[in-house]
Image (cartoon, rainbow, N blue to C red; front, side, top):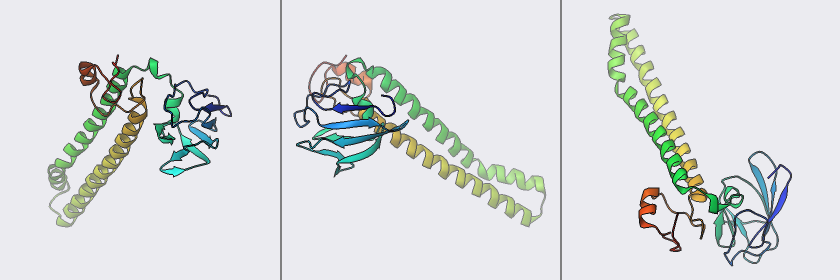
Length: 203
């Protein structure tokens, strides 16, 4: 969608993703792109309503991966604008695993540095001499840096993983029933062959 473009979404809407859920009206709502990552949803007096963060709305601005409900059907702008029949579930899982492992390695590295803090402090104290006041200052500075760095990394990792999981809920979905497949590895889904939600075979 281009900025300023509007489409109708619903069971007979203009969105690429097919919706079969009967709690969704044929023309349930309007979707307008208002910015690079912002869209406005406008409910078209639907029977079951449109909900964002649990609140029934008439008009609301959301982002690409903001989850919302059309009636009882959970979706997002990214999902609506994607033809789910072309989705590569294996690639989506691989990307998720790579991102998660990247943050795990990063936090492990920072924790390792924090564990080495006493040794680094001792070496620095020996370097500056036997002045106990300078040694205390060095110790305090090194510990403070280690603590702040560790907390910032943990905060960034928590936010990144939360964002990653939210994105998975609207992209790692069954191409048939559109339900989230959980954080089940693709190889396990492939071995089981069928969607746990609707029972249709997965590719």
